[in-house]
Image (cartoon, rainbow, N blue to C red; front, side):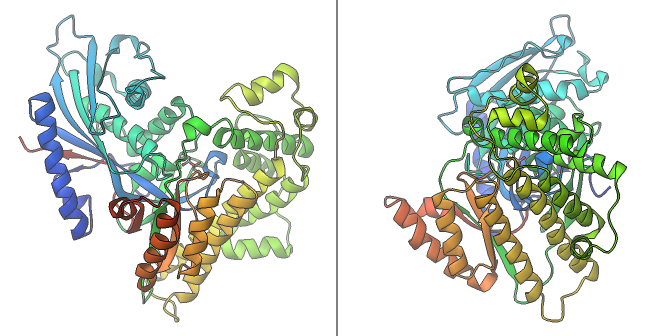
Length: 536
Ligand code: GLA
């Protein structure tokens, strides 16, 4: 399994983390400042640094929570946690572990908490107000990782008594570049290393822990962000699958002369999943759960926890049914996206026919799903709060099937090009044109069917398309945040300039050049999470 079974790597030089010489110089200075700041704040030298990067999702939007595969890449922007461990003395009083957390961003206040490892960490309470609310990420990481730590690592003779941490991040918060998953992943890695368990718990298990931890913070998210942060490989996108188990396969963009690059543009419109979950992210996952149940009822498929996700439902469907032969649509999907693509295409068509095209009220949803009264509340409303009068079952499901298939088509072009190890006869231009078109189609579906765009995202996508991008779309959860565009490298300066003048300076007349520079990024996929050992 490509890379999924190995451990979080230990690195000892920054060039194993950052690839370009420009970033290396900048990062070197940042790391030096952080070491000094740690010593200034804690009066001692740190032992190690944990790093977890953000990600850009290239394609496969809002399908991970339905169990379908996605194609993101880790980016160079990251979270760093500089750490000092003080071991326990092994005495009877050593059942508690104390955490001291500080953050280089002043609005995140210093936080301290203690946890009783004898009692399974149940005493760690989440705070929901105040400047130290950010410490929740750490608390859920502790709670989440604790049951996975082998008993030997918890013994009072090896366990830490004090974990002191300084946090610094370069991923703009709520920019849909996954600052939050990088926080959960990085916190879990701090605990992992502090308990001496880095070579005992696999990267896959770490990604699963980080996914669970994020849900404890209040969003019903899928697993893309944490997996991308943990499995990132320099120069590669990652094909992340969730069935039959979490698996990340590094894959390259096709070779092409002249070359192409991805440009990320942060609209600076804040998209906070935790705050807007009830009307955006979590509401969509409830609409999809309603759709799954309504399709299951109509097609007489089992209603289990697995079939509450559309991919689980698809698999239940194929336990009883097989693909038809001689269906032109199915054959086309197979050609472009393999057997799994054909299965998605065919089931998607049947499933979409099983649900009404128009939005439904709760009364109608009760009839369609067969759940009513308290059973409805338990099934659809008990996990996360949502607010909505009418629910779009068809639109959301249509987006998911379409996007899941598109992701496999995109991935096939990458896979074929990687396997061929050479440029297509026309230098890859035709492949890039197809990839660009898929990014555009993804955006249209996210806007019209998933309804997760906003005016600023539309403006930025439009400017990119008019200034050389082959394809451009919102990336991540949506409702603000960033876009990703596929651009011939020679067109990058023109595109950056057009966005600067046509979006940033118009939308934010007082914006500084520094802020614009931070918001525009022509990027190469970066390496994943790691621990950096500091020489004694
Ligand atoms: C957020 C979630 C991910 C994924 C994307 C949308 O980033 O954390 O799991 O669902 O939105 O694709």
